[in-house]
Amino acid sequence: MDFNLSEEEIAIRQTVRDFAEKEIAPSARERDENSEFPFEIIKKLGVLGFCGVCASPEYGGAGMSYLSYAIIIEELARVDASVAVIISVTNTLASIPLRRFGTEEQKKKFLPALSSGEKLGAYSLSEPQAGSDASNLACMALQDGDEYILNGVKNFVTNGSNADLIIVFAVTDKEKGSKGLTAFVVEKNSPGFSVGKIEKKLGIRSSDTVELIFEDCRIPAFNRIGEEGEGFKIALTTLDYGRVGIGAQALGIAQGAMDKAIVYSQKREQFGKTINKFQAIQFKIAEMAMEIDAARLLLYRAALKQDSGEKFTKESAMAKLFASQTAMKTANQAVQIFGGYGYMREYEIERFMRDAKITEIYEGTSEIQKIVIARETYKSYDKV
Ligand code: CAA
Image (cartoon, rainbow, N blue to C red; front, side, top):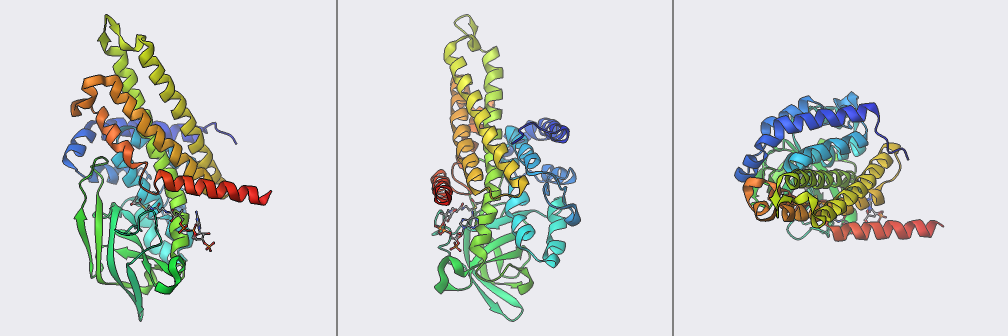
């Protein structure tokens, strides 16, 4: 595998970094304080082609590689993990079900607006009783002529209150368990659809996480993705893609936290010298640098495997697991380097620690990633 970035990928990193430093970083703290959704920033990212990074140009996408996508999410998260997850969800969780399983008509109808950022996407699998046990859904979808009627409650939906279209998974045949689930596109103006509780969160506070309510919600049968019963396969296939995005988000958080800790340690004086002269600090930076490099290699491997068209279930789970652990550890140690100032909101490093935690939870907890990795590892032994 060639881990060297192409000229195009280097240029993409520079473009996103410049945009992130200039347009996102200065207001990130304020948005976090006020739980304010970054509408203007998302619009501008759409214009840059970053809402449909890997979607085909035929459907309005930028047609870039998954490695470019990982770089974009990493650079956004380096300054603001909320912006990174909003962009990640609309790029993958909302778009992959259509790109991989949608009909030509569905692709033409839904993808161009998603890719341009004109419309924002969300993905709604979890329910109050169905988190890690994702197939244990209660939300029902019953066909009525050329419509489906949805009833139930979904929770923890990133982008849910601002999304124009949401990929929703529901039960179409109760008897069949995970083989009785079906995927749908629900547009926000559908009758019977409403946004419920808006969560107050520890981190990623400027992205919205909400409950969605379906009360005799009618959608056209046209909006069913794939066949009835294919929903769980579509959900898990999509999460393989999503997890590369969350791995990239976690990596960006870790990189951003280390960058801040290094700058601070070069200025802060104690005992008559800047603290970067002390081995206690240097050893922390050494651990951070090593783990960030390792996370980046795992992430790039997963992205390159995606680009090659091979199965990447194990690689994406490994990248997400390791990068999220790295984000948590690095942000925690970065706060430690800042000492008492690190605990104060003004210094912004505490935001990285709060934001890092969710990467160990959403799109599959660390424990779920270990289940996926173990299963895939056993499978590879079975083949021998
Ligand atoms: N790709 C395609 N198909 C897959 C797959 C994959 N990666 N993994 C499994 N499948 C298939 C299996 O082959 C199986 O099909 P067959 O029976 O035909 O062989 C079927 O799916 C069921 O698989 P399992 O028996 O392995 O299912 P399971 O019930 O044991 O669950 C799990 C497996 C890995 C635990 C899964 O439930 C899981 O990933 N849970 C976590 C869910 C999750 O990540 N939720 C996050 C939601 S999104 C979010 O966080 C909010 C947000 O907005 C960001």
